[in-house]
Amino acid sequence: MLSEERRREIGQFLRTRRARLQPEDVGILRGLRRRTPGLRREEVASLAQVSIEWYTWLEQARDVRASPATLRNIADALRLEPSERAHLLRLAGHPPEAENGGNGEPRAVGANLQRLIDQLDCCPSWVLGSRWDYLAWNAAAEIITGDIGRLSGIERNGLYQMYLNPKMREMLVDWEHHARGIVGLLRARYAASVDDPWFRELIDLLIERSPPFAAWWDNHEIKGYQDGEKHYDHAEAGRLSFEYTALNVADERFRELTLITYVPMDGTGTREKVRRLLGR
Image 1 (tube, rainbow, N blue to C red):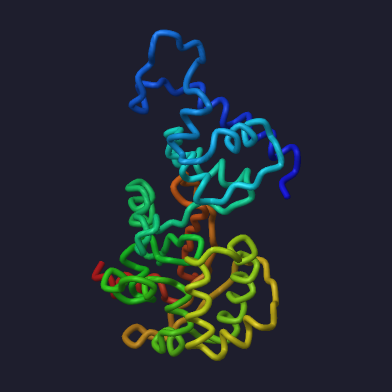
Image 2 (tube, rainbow, N blue to C red):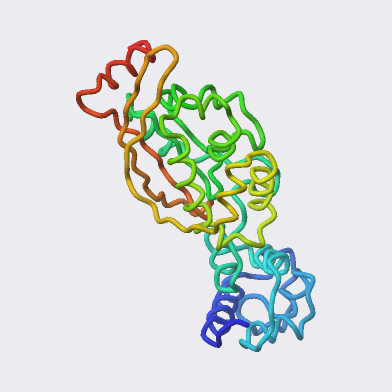
């Protein structure tokens, strides 16, 4: 059940979006006796393939419940921008659309963000979507995770690599401590995506193939994010030590975007080792 305030917000938002469109914008003849500014309700209902009565109730803040698919049809009818589509879905209590846009592959981040992480030079950096898909990374990141560009589908995912890639388990010092902590973070994030098949696909795969993940997942432990340290035993360079941090990134095309950056720890020789591995 949506609160009255939410229903009012939905109704007001839809009315303002409807008023800004002209019939010609959606391929409707204006006619000679039109007095309504923008589109009529029945025109939006027809474009969205819903009944005029139901759509009228939605704008009037009546107690009706709209599915994500129906709201997407309304968003298409009203020519909503990506940020407006996400806003409408959130108002109705639904998560925004997935980063993969329904085609099974994550979208690319903006060029400015890619240039930013490329400038981080000796700091391995990744941009992750809401279910930890790798959306962008720099050259230093591949010292830790290998050639990400050769991965496809669900394999191009930080959680998949953490729990199902034996090489990661061998490299990361105190793997169990870090892997268990990530499950607590994932549990907290999952609360907003319980009904999302795209998110659930990954969870089911990890439960099936990773016994440690399955056991920790069943514990229902919740953990908040904290900065920390990670150490890796690299086959060629030896011990690499980093301080890591995570930053939220604003981008209207994604429900959630996180920048993970590893900074070489002073006094460990890690920065020099990374430079050698990068040929710099």
